[in-house]
Image 1 (cartoon, rainbow, N blue to C red):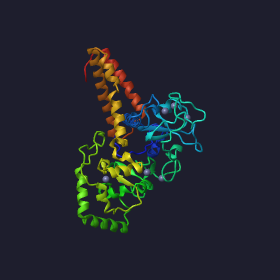
Image 2: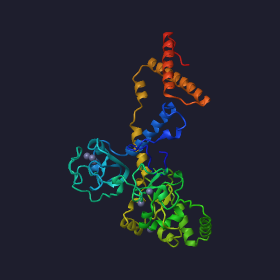
Image 3: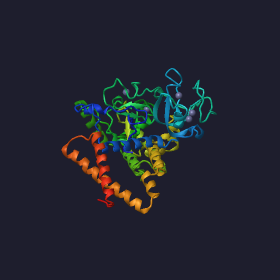
Image 4: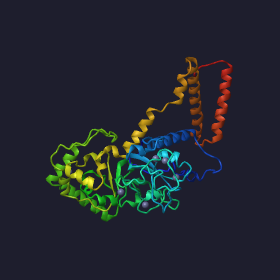
Length: 415
Ligand SMILES: [Zn+2]
Ligand SMILES: [Zn+2]
Ligand SMILES: [Zn+2]
Ligand SMILES: [Zn+2]
Ligand SMILES: [Zn+2]
Ligand SMILES: [Zn+2]
């Protein structure tokens, strides 16, 4: 998974095709323009994306039987529960089996959710996979995403009326999606942060402001002279940190776990120190408030886990923050590795069913094809021209006839 932070992307299943035509506006719009390498790369990317989002979810059994799943791909059905009706969420398996022909909203993944398919929220539908469900799921949390609306601006995604290219970023606390420009601060580059907490959730969880100066990724304010002065002042303040803050800072760096990928769920949070990290940090909350915050890998493991803090997390309903397995990245990695493990390569399958001579012939043929195709495509690259569908077609026709000629002469060798 290349993406560091969870981000919305129209490549996701259910999203709409990106309009690549626009970028190529100068070229003839009549002829489909494509390079084989592009097609292959795109397929691979789409497949990887889909595996990551759907991989950790069961696509055959309704997830309801497993209780509130830590994280799963979720859908809302606007055919069964249109705006005006009560919101409901359905699992991946139900989206295929019970709502296959309906209009579905992709909700990406949400935590601790029980599938609603066929319960009281559905007037005319019985779940085909698991009809025996409780009438309601009181622990489920719903927001406007279940009606296909996102962000503080309550817009659909993709938004037909929005011409500003802006990536959607998911808040890891409320799990709503936000336009980068509606977060109160310019988001850092997506590779520079791992998770985002939106403005409203920061207000609801003020303890995070105590951690922000040490842990959060600093955001770039708009470069007005006033803002620049502000930054300088803040740096000066940072240099004058008192004893207690220094000690707390050291504690934070010491407890850095050895994992770097953030995907290791076995990394538990250790807190042998008797003093509360949060109390130590609370002395000085100097970060400017009223914005979303952006956090790096492994920041969750640096939150204090003393009894007092754990109680506070639980009261604020954010206990998941101390759990590295709760991250979207952990979920996506699980999906990717699960499926890669049991994915069989059709080529290897075929090869293993062939005898030695057949294997050698096939591999020779494949090598021939690869070399010739590369040479062929290089010509286009050298000339700076675009490969069209007909060109690829022509290549395969010529390759076939060359192969036939070779076969006629009974020469099997690798060129
Ligand atoms: Zn279900
Ligand atoms: Zn439906
Ligand atoms: Zn169902
Ligand atoms: Zn917005
Ligand atoms: Zn939020
Ligand atoms: Zn504490």
